[in-house]
Every structure is written in C-alpha cells, then in structure tokens.
Amino acid sequence: MIYFDNAATTYPKPEAVYNKMDQFYREFGVNAGRGAYERAKKGAKLIEDTRSKVASIFKAGGDKEVIFTPSATIAINLILQGLDWKDGDVIYYSPFEHNAVLRTLYKLEENYNLVLKEIPVNNLTLEFNLVDLEQMFASEKPRLVALSHVSNVCGVIAPVEEVVKLARKYGGSILVDGAQGAGLVPIDLSEVDYYVWTGHKTLYGPFGIAGVVVDKKATNLTPLIYGGTGSASEEREMPIETPIRYEAGSSNIQAIAGLNVALDWLEEVGSKEVFEHEKKLTLKLIDILAEFMDINLFIPKDLDTHFNVVAANFSGYKPHEVGKILDEKFDIAVRAGLHCSPRVHEFLGTMPNGLVRFSLGCFNTEEEVDKLKGVLDSFLI
Ligand code: PMP
Figure 1 (cartoon, rainbow, N blue to C red):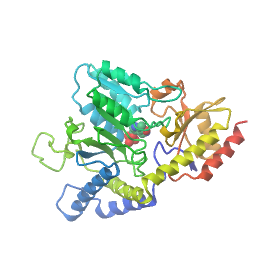
Figure 2 (tube, helix red, strand yellow):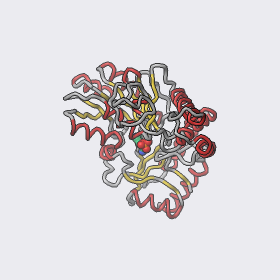
Figure 3 (cartoon, rainbow, N blue to C red):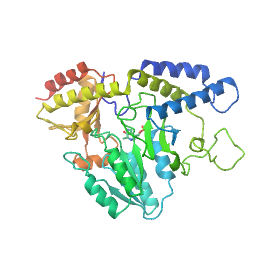
Figure 4 (spheres, rainbow, N blue to C red):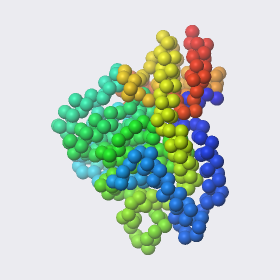
C-alpha cells in the first residue's frame, strides 16, 4: 500500500515506537503513580520524563505546563469547556477549524450567550486578512481566538505570531490547535495560552496520548473529567494542583511509553529534517497534480505558508469515487470527503462531497509520489 493519509494519523510509526510500547507494557505495565513499589514508580517516572520531553520539543519555558489527555479532541474540550464564559464573550475562530473545535464552540454558543466570529481569510489565496481582523478585534474584543496551526484540509500554516500579537493587543487569549504540524512546523509558544498537540500525527507516536501546553497563568480551568488521581483521595474535590487536576483516571502508560520513544526518534532524526523531507515531497506532489487539467488544487498561493496536505478536486469524478479507484485498483490510501472540517469546505465551495486529500509523512518516498503520476495518467484520460 502507498499511504497518503498521514493527516489522519502518521503510519507506520518508527520501529522503536512499536518495540518500546510492547517492551515497556510487559515489564512495567502496572498502574503508574498508584503504588509505592518499584514498577509503579518506574511508570510514574516515565510519565514525568515524557512530560519534560514534550515541553522540550515545543521549547516551552518554565512558565508553561504540559497536561496529558487521551486525544487532541479531549484537550480542546478541556480548554473550551473549562473556561468560565461570561455572557456576550466573543470567540474568533478560523474557517479551517476541525469539528473538535467547531462542534465544541457550537455547543458553547448554545449553552452560554457567546458570540462566534470567523477570522477573515481570502478564499482564493487562502491568505489571512489581518487588517480586517484587527478592525474586527477593535470593534468586538476577543475573549478567545481559536486557530488551527496547520489546516488538515488545505495545509495552510496559520500566521500564529501575528494573530497572537493582535489578540494580545485587544486582550484575548489564544488557543492553537496543533493536531497537524506539532513538533515539525516551528511555532513560538511564549505568548500562546493553550497549544494543543496529539501524539499520533506529526509527533510519530501512538494513539491514546495527546495534550496541551498551557501557560501557567491560564491553568485556572474547571476540570472536564472528575475522578481518581492517586492523591488526596479523601477530598471530595479534585486537587487544585496541576497537571493532575486535569488528569483523572489511570494513565495510558503504554501510549506514553510510545510517545516517549517517538520524541527521542524525532530528536535523533531531527524535526527540521523531517519537516524538510515532507515539504520537498509535497512540492513534488503539487507539481505532479498541477500537470493534470482535470485536477484543481486547494492550496495557498504562498507555498511558504503550506505544509504536507494537498486537497484536490477531480473534474468528472466525485471525491469518494477517486478514493475508491485509488484504493481498489492501485492500493493507494487517501481520504475523500469533508475531513471532519465542514466549514472549510463551505468556504471553498466544495460542499457536500468535499475533496480528495493527499497527506504526506516522513516515511513516504519520491518513488511513491512518482508512482502516483503513472496511476493518474492511467485513469485520467
Ligand atoms: N484538530 C485537527 C486539525 C485534526 O486534524 C484532528 C484529527 N483529525 C483533531 C483536531 C483531533 O485529533 P485527535 O485525533 O487527537 O482527537
């Protein structure tokens, strides 16, 4: 199989990830942090070691804290449902947001008297209009800005630094959904209140471990989940100390072991090198797809603001038909449809069927991208 669905999850993982998960779970798969015996202590140590490796890959300073959650979706819910919303609070979000953000915002809008505003983006160049955004902020001050770091449909890298500056100027906090791009696409987190990441995508770790890098000043959230923390069990309330306040329940030690070794692998291979490899292949893929008259690409005009995801429309075919042909005839995995991001498809005019998405990963090769050219030649006449 040629796997071009790395935005859904990167696959395969580095061999060391599979090995470590198996080995660690066999040897130390007891309930970490829930016992004073050696193996439980070893698990607890691994959790803290992984926490500091996560902080280090994001260059998060001492003013930041890493909270673990089972997925980016849960991390986003932790933040959005944990903030104490006031009547009339204004939340800005980009048209690129995933349903993890959108559906949560829609529910909040229903439950509280919140105002949702979309960040202006040019739907041809896919460029953020920061001048108009500043005017919007000036007339309706943001309480929070939610921004997808890299779009899981168009691969657009959001101008995080510029938006952060504007949000700060007008008193808003900022949540960046880094599910796509975390660890590979450089970002300065110093002024970002909440940076959500997930282990199973660009960090090359397993499912089951994700989280948020939070500014310590912004940790005053209502917990999303209540339960055991292995500490102060006699108390009726959740502990006030973070991060355990937000990490009720047994830790997924197997996934944490996998993430730990994935972060070592990324450090060894080099995030920059992985980024450059994926970028190079993406440019090649764009060149190949652009050669076909029947293919229309949905990528930003400025390719410096683009990373590893290319969505396309094939005239004469519905996206799922292309996906089916590629899978059944050529054993190529892509993702067709709305990619859990309906707003961007409305914005691009690609509702209701969506697009065909090709997303590249570190283990894809030039040969695989070249092979796609031959495949497209054979069925696009
Ligand atoms: N945000 C974006 C932009 C995503 O692409 C995804 C995964 N498709 C998520 C959030 C949710 O991530 P997770 O699978 O870790 O819940």
